[in-house]
Length: 446
Ligand code: GLU
Image (cartoon, rainbow, N blue to C red):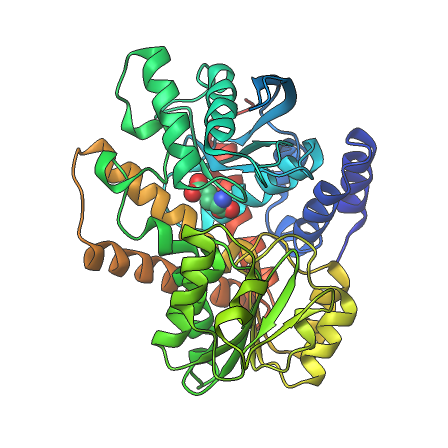
């Protein structure tokens, strides 16, 4: 569906941002959907909305020096890309992982613009992080790194400007250290500057569970639209972090059975269904490896180096990282009878894989729609902070559930309206884009 104008813009973006392959991939996926939108809305071309949307409003890159446990000075690179603030303050997580460079943060920030628009809540798009590797670091090292990171970041963020949160490598512990440092430097207790905070100091119930629960709610809606449900379904969930854990929990609650999950060392297969309390203990408390699951569950298998997508399932939930589902994996999933895919991670399926899912006409929920529950609940945390209130678990979960249902409905209806029924890639990209584009037109050339 690429028209000539969009192809030119895409070429400009790749030339302007050399080597940032993940960013190119994310832009390409959105632009590919926008041909029919430009045909209906010539004003977007006139206002150069697409070119503007592809250029971050602000990109901050900074040095993060810190001292490790052997008293050696270490230097990392910190990033915050404030991509688009048409709908609200920049909002999006921080990722600490050695693979982080500007291209990763830009792809995540770009995705975040449309994801956040889909939530229907007043949040713009941004993302940040560092190439710091938290693996094997002591609590003291993590704290000193987070303090140094915030010593620069604090001047750029704020309740009304930019509100970071967690992503890969950044959870409650890191948010705590960063909030503490912000409070110390500024001498202000501003709850609304970060989300994903602890429950005793401004955090929201359900935020921890939200991305996982939300992606299951989204898949539940896709299944419902096809007259089906999770009941009795076999599922595979990649990853074993926060997103994967609460995806497994919700699938089990809805009567499905998750038989495999993974980490960077390999995957475990348990035909009786993954015992979630063991995974929680292993990952949340002991910070161990999934391989150790087989120490206590002798019947389970650990597979090193293979692809978790070889495990037959009806529902697949990629919840680890970008490009973890190749074309070959997607083909295998479809061959094995997979009928639904819900992406808990950001851009986990390669373009070849997406094509295979769409051609097979299975229910494919792309990350920017399926995993929007995390950031949506962050926006609910911001609401609670702004009103100095805290809501119950049940109420917050109900709000999350309604948000996910609405995202599904909007994507579903937009796909129909633009002539691609059942295509949630088209539905999510067009719906998210339209919201941001209309706001940008209204606000003039800024
Ligand atoms: N990192 C999450 C995401 O990819 C959550 C961001 C947030 O809560 O701000 O959407």
